[in-house]
Image (cartoon, rainbow over all chains, first blue to last red; front, side):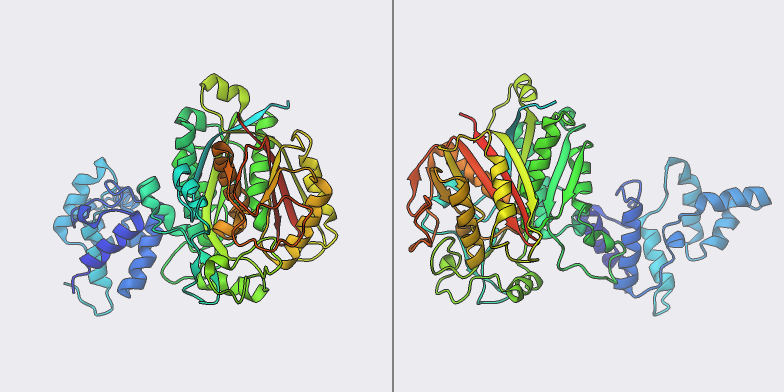
Length: 126
Length: 386
């Protein structure tokens, strides 16, 4: 089952928003204005409602900039560094994140969905 | 500095309505809107119908950490700001003084990361500060049923002392949940064996047996008189005195001697004309409260014009009771009409002007008193602005 609808309802509930505003392409931080305590709640709610184990740093792409700085320091290609850190995100999505980063936090609802699909209990990697 | 302090806004969400006209119309009815509790049919409650926080404040994601009582307080605060016509520039350095109750439903949760915030009473203070842009002197007061009365008293002192030109003060509470109903019932303070829920709570009646549980929020905007005049805003009342005291006796019932309660009342009397007072009694309808409170009143304000007890009409709002009752008292004072104490048939004493019938009355002073669990006493002297 695609976890999008569950994730949408979690976001709508925690951020007190109309679910109709939330699509897979919606930015969680940039557009929905989720703050750090909201992310904490979203992580716990996903864990609880989807029965998955959540690593907040991974789920919310918190370390993207650190990963890229380290990659530059180590002389690694940025895309390769992101791939190894976020293997559950498609390469196309990682390219978008790289392009998008200067405009602010790149986290989108679809990234949460991808995480839930990759780390769901049923092992469904969609 | 000892500045005069006035009330320039009143916001409330109560079982009898959420504006002056609704409340006044409801107070002209013979009884309050009591029903039997869903949690326990032998308990009378007075709920706020169809409360929707969003209708008052719009989107509020942090409402997830607020109790219903706190949400009622937040709605009341937004209404008070609106009623006073306060703009963000007036609120930036304003004080915030809230009287709140415990969250009896809070417990560790698997589905909520910050359930700790459910347990912290100042979570509402923080949410309100962010929403209204209030950043000044503040206190979150948890002195049981004296809490909001004391909060208003502390706000009065802060404005009088020049610590703030503007302050919001009030409280909110709701104890209608199954946990709260059970807690009160086991404490033995609820009205029992009533035939109709509107006749459960009968303050100062010989057949009283306890209180009925209400819920709601009431918040006032306070300003120094000078600030209010400079702004050219309407003035509802002046706060002239505030006091608090501790019985230091029983954890639940009042000290039968009432010494500390009496002292608190006396400290509020200077500034009030003792022949023009309407007492907004705590009047819970418990055997002991009304007996001790009656004794205190007979000793302190023998010449009062009238003694009323709004708990007979909205139930006991716990931490919020004093401010809720003052809000209704100001509505009645403005209209020149005070309702009878509902259900008062055979008064427990004849040496007090207990309101057995509605009365055309324009009191020059209101004496608010709240006597809470823990022997917490708080009083206020308030003069309607005429």
